[in-house]
Length: 468
Image 1 (tube, rainbow, N blue to C red):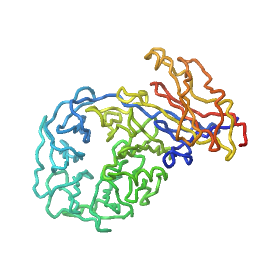
Image 2 (image 1 turned 30 degrees about the vertical axis):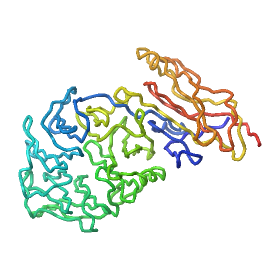
Image 3 (image 1 turned 180 degrees about the vertical axis):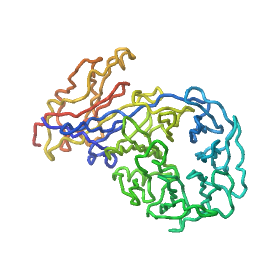
Image 4 (image 1 turned 135 degrees about the vertical axis):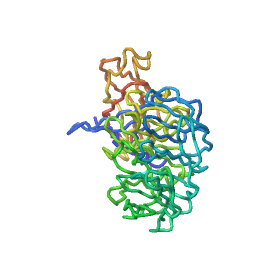
């Protein structure tokens, strides 16, 4: 028997052919301690928390115990009680909405859309921004009591302290390179301004009329306005973004360290609309997850382990989750498919009622150019995971589908079904007389769609070498 090389980090290879070292789709690896290797567990599901009658999620923020969420042409608000949200007011537009607030006892709330800046107040009020000295902004954030706006012409405006008033001279410019600001964010008491080629770090020095001054320049810009995450409240695990060179970078002091693997770099390079790349973050069982989503892919990075996994939702090749936000003691996520706000939930093994298929693919068991006869394969999974009071049979007696490929993943066998065991019932998961591999070796695939706990440790197969 030889060990089946199940990966710890996803590595699909180009077109998923012979160069693949295995894939983790909707599963991520978790160390088990010294000399015990790792398990692969399912990513968290999505449980409905707040609902609306709209679709077209555009962004959200929590202020003073109220969650404001933009869907389609409406702004909604909800509370920690969950359930149906209340329509706050109409909010024209279709693209991302950027929210912030200052530090006043009664916070002044501001949102920026493609149609300009607005203030939110009262039970249902949305008003045009009260100071005409503010040009059309592209994004907004708050720091040290200032509201800070990026402007399409390259300027950065700041309000007076804890005010919406804007001095027409209270602005700065990114001058390290002639790249106008793409996005501004707050991080650890500093203002970070991403241009198309550089990241400039500015600090509050209390000058007037503009209070910020440049402190450092990092030579990696931002590929898309929403391709950065890790600055959100409740996170604190690090800032990552898709840089202008098409790689994912993690900020370490003033160093932008590359963390993306070649397979992800290739997907980003081939993204037809890189300006629409979307990054998000969430915490699950102590793991800090950073996710990047394109038009036909989603990849997640576990900052704890520095390992990558892929995410897919039902019948699509990317995650349906959009922006995430930490509110009411939980991580919330907007939904691409509905008008709901979901909570990230590791105890739910579905996404809004849709299956969340966990898939693990191995690298090849090969002795090139020899072929291998596979008389037996055994798989080490957590068994007895059925739920006695669950839905019959998907939860009471769940199954794993086992298939294999002998041509590098181009074609896969019809899956064999093996029971994972009713609640607390241990089972052996084995396949017998699985034929002869090709010279490229044998790759294995495990699929679990039933909504139960998934934990995969590894597997072994017989490997009798055959010439010819």
